Image 1: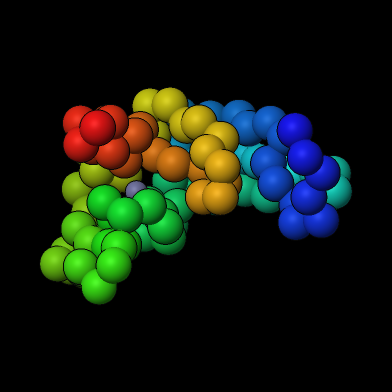
Image 2: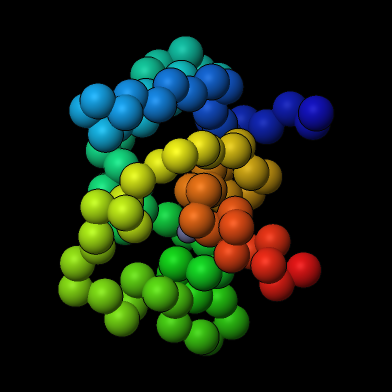
Length: 94
Ligand SMILES: [Zn+2]
C-alpha cells in the first residue's frame, strides 16, 4: 500500500443498535457517523452521479430506513467507504 498524507479509515465498527458507524483513521482519531448522514454523503457514482449524470440522491427528498441501513461497508480506494447498496449496484454494472 502506498503511503498517503490523506487520512483514511483503518478500521470501522457498525453499530446496528444506534444506526451509526464508528471509524478509526490513520491519524488515530475516531469519528462517529449516522448511517443516514453517510448515505446522503455517499460519493459513489450511483448516489451522487458521475460525468454530468445526476445520481440517485439528486432525485430524492428523503431516504427510507432500508436505504440508509448499512449491512456491510468496505474500504474502497478513493471513495474511502462505500455503502452496501452502492457496492451491489456498481458490481451489477461490471
Ligand atoms: Zn453510494
